[in-house]
Image (cartoon, rainbow, N blue to C red; front, side, top):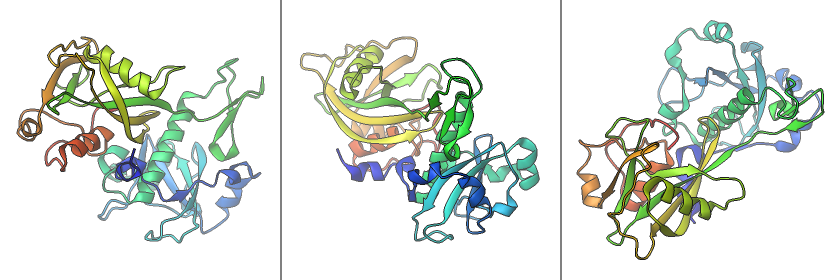
Length: 322
């Protein structure tokens, strides 16, 4: 495993102290609202407000410039020494309604989703946007108690929800998934085309970890289910959050198991429709033929890690969660 690999992943970067102990402080968000030094990230329909000028940068606003919004979330304190705001600046996210967002900034081109700008944002801004989107998506899907169905209340500066009926407390969740670069004896890699994509789009194989399953066991099971191939020796590379809506991708390499023929490919026919082996030269030569994962994805980083050089083709954004 290599933290150097993880640190290169666009959505794994961060420069914020999440300051978890402060979340339980009574009235924290109200206190920060009266602090002129606080800065707010504003979110509308999953998009954040950006500065108009290049390079891409979040437009963080003073509290008196931001409407009330649907709810707010304490993000922590800035650690970035190269940011416009000083180290230690408290940071809050505000989720706005349609009316509030367009009144604040009517130019919709300045409201930008995460994937197109993930690779161009600073470490702090990429981490802030990823953190915000992950927690906001969790709120959107956990408005009611999983035990009794009662509408839950937001607590701890946006980091928990509590049921006023049964008292149950719900915390943000992340769904683990494995994504795997499989190699054969000739050091070719296996890429697959998903049923939801264009026919010429290919990526690494991936799947969710099931309850009671280790990451390594998930690698072996998922690769067999999607390709019909048995793999061995899963080796962890690094991880990247993928808040679309709530995953974290654990990157692995694995090799074909002894006695397993590379030609014995069996796409599942439902999720994976086509599978192809690529050598390095074949991948380099395929730029006009296939579409590879976008630069914000861990799949792109793993492929480039195997290739030994950056790819100079492929879209800047990726469809799905790979």
